[in-house]
Image (cartoon, rainbow, N blue to C red; front, side, top):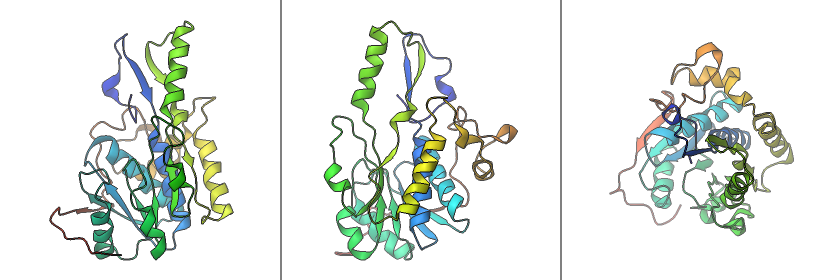
Length: 265
């Protein structure tokens, strides 16, 4: 299983099943939501590992921000803890980027939602629901979190097994890109913004036709061509991970683990 396509998985051995989650689509949508919601031009995202798929998803989040707000500034806080030290990241954000309103991260839970809304700031949470579709739903139903990714892997793996049991050829790539989607958009977000984001979600997740029109949009091309080659005016998702770099216009701040967080925000 992988979050994204990669040339390294082609061709696939006959005993290997490649499951693609198309997570970059949801990160683009999160960027659209964040930029629509925020009155500030400044945004923060915690980047846990400065390589590969996480960098690619930050680039797509940035593309979503620019799609709505061409003046959006994104700062990536580099810290290899997957959001577990959220207070450190949040407090550094206050010092380095004081005008931000939306904090995004890759921690697989809502890491700081209990405190951010009390000071008029919000998070784009990242939930990976592996065991139960009810995982963390209680936190997500509050007004403290803008949106999340829900990946309910248990029914998807069940369907995969049943397809094999029914005699379908599972050799090579088995695409279940529909597993990644936005859900639980906070009630603090206006109906007009929610409708706009969900409309884009339907457009770029046309599972029935297996089309990924997002990768051929002009605004994606204009953003991504500064990161890696984009032949024929279209981003090739198969090559997107090979040697990918963080977009040069994204600011980088490396968190110091010795930083002493403030007692409150």
